[in-house]
Every structure is written in structure tokens, then in C-alpha cells.
Image (cartoon, rainbow, N blue to C red; front, side):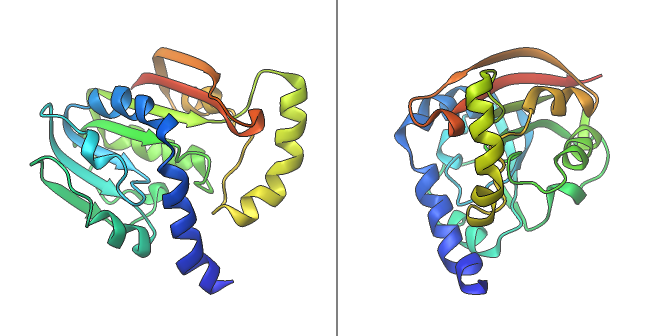
Length: 203
């Protein structure tokens, strides 16, 4: 199991994040970041090439040493990147020191997602923004049935990924007000492809 978690799983995660259908989401969400940016669950660095000049510094938070090592080798624009090998439930930054928090397909795997969102709110400055694209709980009852039944087995082989996380209520419950949100299915298996994309601010 240790070999799977330390070697196989990081490579599977990297492979999943190479899906070309994710590129438009990355372009919109990452391209909208500004100032000092904290990326939650930076993984193998698939977002790094999408940061534009409005991002002045990137703090790439990722708990997996293997994925951090992979991310260090990803080419990106001339924006300073600092890797934080830490958990989102305990972000090692002071209060109100970040302009933008960005999370892309990360909330599904964080064990205590509500705690992590509270931490994101804590480190955001007044007027800062949370930008997100996540997959999660679908509106269709038949799809939800499958999400609920697949999640126990799925999370055991996919690094803790929950197919049935209610993304919008989670974000709002952590003290954010959502400015904009778009939802819908991406092409693929419906239990795994209902997307939430949007922007929120601390209340």
C-alpha cells in the first residue's frame, strides 16, 4: 500500500490532470488570479503554465513530496514560485496575507474540506478572492445515487477523492459569499464530471 500511495498514486493523479478537456477551465480560473496567489493542492504543477502577469507570486501548497518534486520541473512564466509542503487544513501563512486563493479539483480529496476552506478564508486579505473549479455532487438524483455508492471504493484508490462533495454549500458554509458560479457536466462519466466553476469572497 505504501508503494501505491508513494509511487503509483502520484503518477495516476498526474495522468488524470493531463486531460485536455480540463484546459479551458485552467485558462479561465488560473488566468484570473492576481497578486500573491495561494494554490491549494498544486499537485504535479499542471496549473503553473497558465498563470499570467497579473499573478506576482505563487505559493504552491501540496502535501505530497512526490508531486512537489514533479511540479518543480514544470516550465512556467517568470513568476516566483514557492512550494509549501503542507496540508490545506493547516496553511503555514499569516492571516490576511494572500490576494487570491485558487483551488482546482482539490476539495474532493482534502479530508476536512470545511477546515481547509476556513483556512483559505483566514489567509485571504480583505477584498481577496477564492477562485475555484471542482467536481462534485450532481443535481440529478440518478447520478447522485451512483456518486454515493461509488465514492467509498473510489476514494480508496484515488487519493481520497469524493465524488459526492456538495461544493457550493461547502464554500458558503465556510464564510464565503459566491459572486459567480457556473455548473454543468463535462464530457465523460456523469458521476465524475459535474463541475462547479466560480468566484467567491470572504463575508
